[in-house]
Image 1 (cartoon, rainbow, N blue to C red):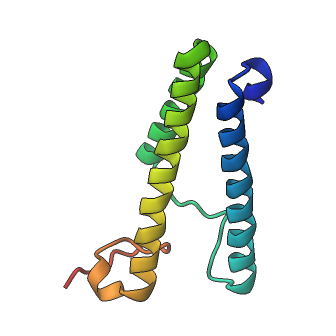
Image 2 (cartoon, rainbow, N blue to C red):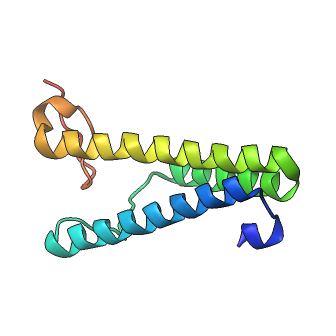
Length: 119
């Protein structure tokens, strides 16, 4: 939606389209994983209230930043949001893989909310 309000350079537009396509492919793959494994519950986020409030505040701040910017500053901020999102998803993915395959060593919280020992 934002790209209809704020035009970007052709190379940035192409990159954003590639990111959107890759994200859609990842979402489809994740949905298939959830379909094949009933223990994966995509609608159960189970975040503490502080985490939810923090995420909402970040989203609101980024939205205001993007709507208030133009030109190169807008494009840079837009690309930085994508970089931050990819970094977050990479860490989340690695955490989930470690918890699934190495539960005794992960020291992470499982999706059910139980804490696993790092020993």
